[in-house]
Length: 205
Image (cartoon, rainbow, N blue to C red):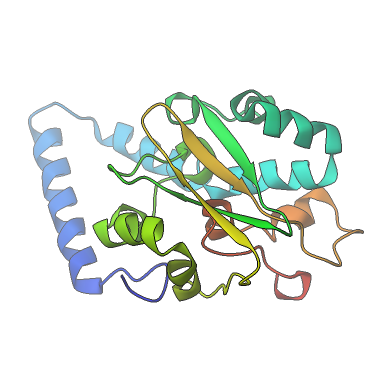
């Protein structure tokens, strides 16, 4: 696996894009798919479904202890309070990071992922190298994403499935006590909710 979290090769990306466009054109041409339907779906994933939803969930948990308790007790139900759900978010378990424990998520069989709060899974999440290595050497793999988990902190790997998906609740960064919920959400990264990274520090947001 590479040493970063968005290492799509341009050539591979171009090939995939061309195949997708060709398939889309064929389906539209034969009447199986409407162009406006494709546009609406793309727009939904661009504006309505993605890591910004998960960031709002995390920010609410950081600023509202009662919501956080509900989130850890029943992730799907609490997430639904903010209007996020659907099939891919049907059964979400939220795993809280702490001073003693760091959580990281993988799907060893395929690429099951809580789309409603994280959007589409990144390419590296679907790669066999990540799926195999993070189970065996999570500390090394997380380090390759740029976060050196302290040696005295335990790491727990959660394996998603078609029935259960996981979302990491990262620790709130220090120095954020006076920030609003929107400002807190701006600190939350997709990688921190998968467990291969940390939230941004306030100065970097």
